[in-house]
Image (cartoon, rainbow, N blue to C red):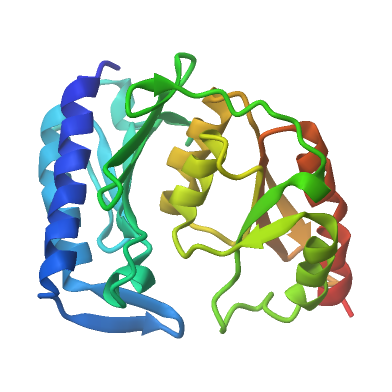
Length: 278
């Protein structure tokens, strides 16, 4: 697998620039997909642009977009990759709720994952700050061309934790009634930005010390997970049991610059399970 990284970065930056232009003009329609979950016409337009451009960069890859779902590779290579393909995973505008309210905190997210669903390339572009984050598996992570190293192992009480709370209709919303106060007591500060990919990018860049989210989709975390790992941070994807009599669970993402913060997040897992199985 070989992808022209400078060209890929330029494509994602162009997509992010298009989102920002639409944001500045305010010319888009919005509808609610579910309670607390919005989509704009800009999301669909940026995703269509990315789908077209990425298919040229890596024709053998499938495409998974938040808005359009999964589509097969535009060309068949007649190889073993047809049964175990690469996949582009895309969130055209992460932070749509911010976007539609005029809050300049959103980004464009693209990852390329292998047949094992492991990210091999991840890019997150924030057009409002003109900041680009990217990582390549085994080769490191960068911010605007500068290598990243998120390796400061601060004690949790000296650390900032970025959180992603569930939608109002989530089955685990009530389970977090114990988790959130526990997190407040465990960390020096908590931030909820509304753009989870940027939370992970900022963790990789040292602006945050830890991250926690529940029941997130692949386009929310795969690019950021690679950034955190390649910057030297910790990343953990785990399923927590939430029902007493069956195996139903909730996916919990925890990431941290150092082991102390990761341990503090893991210590909170029981608060979710205990609240949910009552």
